[in-house]
Image 1 (cartoon, rainbow, N blue to C red):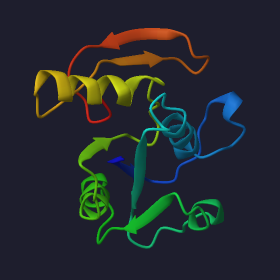
Image 2 (tube, one colour; image 1 turned 180 degrees about the horizontal axis):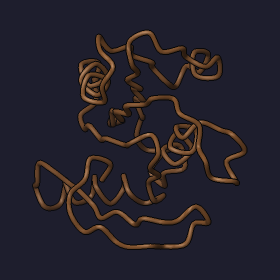
Image 3 (cartoon, rainbow, N blue to C red; image 1 turned 180 degrees about the vertical axis):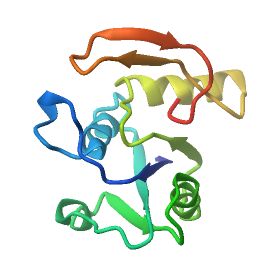
Length: 145
């Protein structure tokens, strides 16, 4: 079984979306990883890089499917680098803590990598408002794609 290391930098901020009911941004991002159509055929190594000294909520500290990695600094780059240093997968994917993956994202990316022989896969970003209505499509490579 292939392993996809998912690198997430998180400030462990709470979502302002009304439907989030005060949940952390990362909670929805984690659900989108676990809802991937290929989840039964790959292993996800979820690595969450956090700022030095950040308090880890109990639900993440006790989750065996998530590895929290404390960075040496207090920047997104430091958190990403700290988490990436622990990646063990054949593939590495980046997801921002306030972004979500379409359920077919990882399957489409792995298929493109295997069939086309590319060393990199990216996607577009659909930006939505707080009600979930589409605002615009950003059609350029981004970290979460």
